[in-house]
Length: 99
Ligand SMILES: [Zn+2]
Image 1: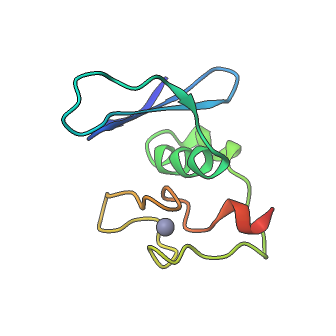
Image 2: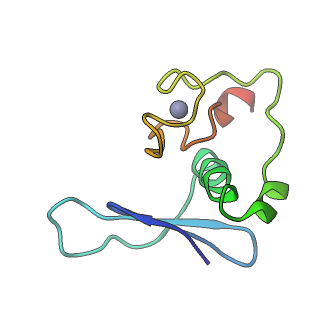
């Protein structure tokens, strides 16, 4: 299922729970191949999509106490309104900091 398709990026969720990303370069007519999302991208994109599909919330773990807030968006997950933070991908905290 397609979670997101906006300017330059498409995100898809496979039935096995994996999340795939395809980014397009500005000005390029050749799409890049699909790649598997990083842990940060996976949780961030799932969180963003869960606003639309609440059943996705079960796939998102609670924020670990040690996790650092994203400094790019001050933990909000968004730069302005619906523009997803490019660092934490809407999650508001950093997966790698809690690993
Ligand atoms: Zn952020």
